[in-house]
Length: 99
View 1 (tube, one colour):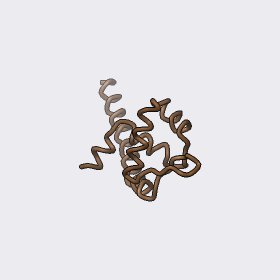
View 2: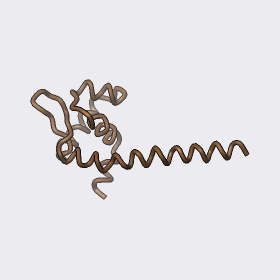
View 3: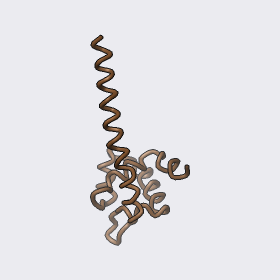
View 4: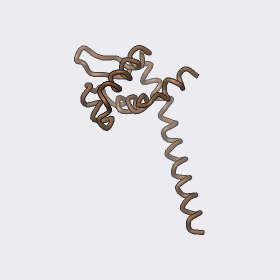
């Protein structure tokens, strides 16, 4: 439950999503997160670092740790499931409107 509580914090999943393909510096990550407040981004990055999900390199860029990448591999199927689910809901709603 602790993991789900942590992942449910605002912006945590978005930050993980943006770091899934490449390390990013603070400003690049902020821009990809729709110009998230620097205070909140800093707080979330510190939390992610303290849980060993994200690391900050000497160059200042943030990257997923091995544990972070493994977590991403667990979360990605949920993303695909959610896309499928949303598509089915959309189709159901469209069918209902036509009646």
